[in-house]
Image 1 (cartoon, helix red, strand yellow):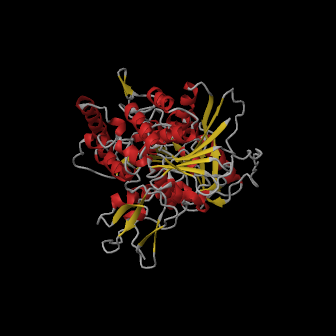
Image 2 (cartoon, chains in turn brown, orange):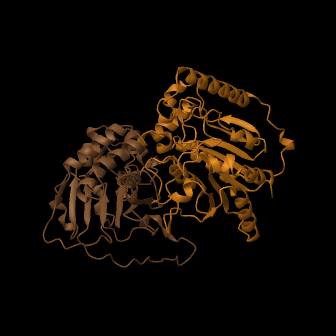
Image 3 (cartoon, one colour):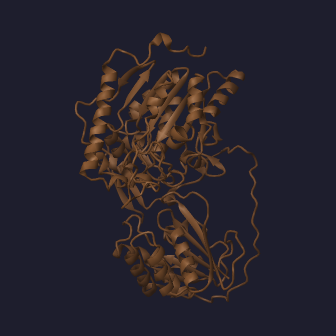
Length: 284
Length: 310
């Protein structure tokens, strides 16, 4: 049995990618399974989905905690989400990134593959610059580097089940298949045994949530960051007044300061700023 | 220090789980600024029950009770009775519910709370569909709107039925205070929430709450779309206190409703005839509202207004 875990952000198509993979495996005569983690399915928020593929019916129904393959649809998640947790030594890590896979070698003793799926998606008009829909390009790359499903089956699954833009999505899968690069950096161990599956049972100490949500930064939801030009700022406070995330505060002199750990990059402050002193910039 | 037009203290915490550009999140932030710390909020199943509780934390600096979707009105009635029994008569009891949980599933509970003259504030944040479960139509979805259950295709042209007039239903119960609020107008929003805070008896706030993923527009447009809703007459701002209606944002001429509709993907399929129909309906409602506000006649005689609880 092959166990796969997908990491993405709400809106990128991680859940659909896991479903399409299952459809493709079914076409190849396998027994697949696919389901999302039931969590905060908000646009921009980290999202997890699972798939299992076997030659016989799959009985296990739990979350994938010791995957053979991890797929990361947004390289920004590498910094904040423990995407490689439980990934078996010698397992496959496929990342949507314009970087060379060798540059990602620090992530662990894995076979690492990289594909610039955002560029492929934009070339086929899938999604926007701030939120390219990268799932199908990544699935094409997955077919190539995993060998678990065929590209033909992935394309057929997209043409039958993709919610929209089937032609463009199938073309993106083919490009992902062609463009993906794999690196084997240093000694890669043989695929080790799965770690024992223990599900930690965390019970609340108290039925009352007493910790503030400010212990949970939301910076990794954002793809664009507001940059305030204090030279043009008139201290009108519109950015503060309209922020749904309470992510603007003031310094002692009344100038606005971004609380970067909580800004989700919605862009309201930039759109509402009367002197246009705020620009939304891509994160470096 | 900065020149502020609304109160500085923040009782809504960052780190909540709302989507980027979420108007209901801004609405909660503004509401708690007005109501202050001596407040208990009861939230039924809706976006806010998820927004407020990224486990094991809370995004509210005041106590919050999570309750079933149909139970907000009953829940705040019970909270009021319990607070009074404990001698906490100054505590403000607030229900904060979505449009589905209010105007559809929770309607009997809301009606009961209003009819019992419960001393509490009921807030309905109206994002015009069941957004938390993935954009299914509600009684509060406007005519023509795309939702996942009113799709656009050969045999469906968005929602076929008009939006339910929740404030009309509420006013039939003769509340102490009822008002429409829009987070695109924060000063008006806070002033009305403060007015509700200072009165006793049943109070109802109808909050306009644009939703970027559900209404299909880019998140930075939330405030602009809210402003257009009011300036086109789609969501006029007014308040009714003891039966007397006052428009709080007066306009000599409404902006064309097309400006509001064209800004949102959920209305992208509407043709010019559809838009003319919406325009005519909006104009009728606006004229009716202005006539009501001009009239000295109250919808019910003040002497018949039931006494508010001592």
